[in-house]
Image 1 (cartoon, one colour):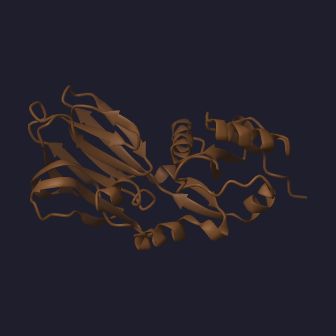
Image 2 (cartoon, rainbow, N blue to C red; image 1 turned 45 degrees about the horizontal axis):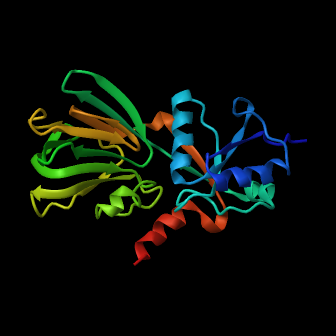
Image 3 (spheres, one colour; image 1 turned 60 degrees about the horizontal axis):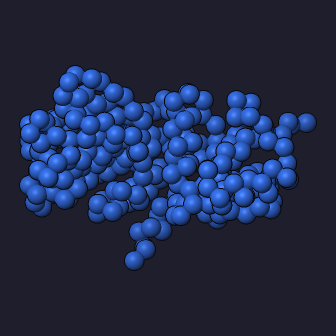
Length: 258
């Protein structure tokens, strides 16, 4: 007889999520996260990203079935109280590989952070950022003058990347989006689509006069000098979706939203 998976319930600190948690706790037993085989997360996309980042930090990655009790809920399933066990049994598993950002500040501090959606570089002052862009050891843009630039995964390509007019990347496409944010020079450059094997390095030109911050999802490092971004294959995350609302279909359909 196959043992039933041990499930932990993680809840966003909002009234809607807390109310839903009360209903679910009355229907079944839940275990502490340390004992769990999988996670049910109640909240929005931001809470799900927090949950996944916590797993990356603890180096204990479990499948996550999220239910939306936030605003957009792009990475979540629909909230329904009933038939949760049946939904999880039928759920489709998606592997999501995050980025790894290696940043060095102008003071020489080195910081390594994961990013599930994107790594973005942003100007800190009214002056535009000036960046050198290197791909796989080759300088492809000696000087990019802009408000910023970002590298997005397929899972994150419909988030900040899409708002910056970057391309939507199908899940499983093994691609990364390199997208400028309000580019001034070269004015006509609209970014690039790169293989996920690419190693992308940014060097901040004149980092004292034109300071730049680097953001890995929601975590910021200020006054950076160099930033290297690449796929982190050692940290693949696992998301579960209802078959009728699978992540790959959602990403593909975003291309037809007007």
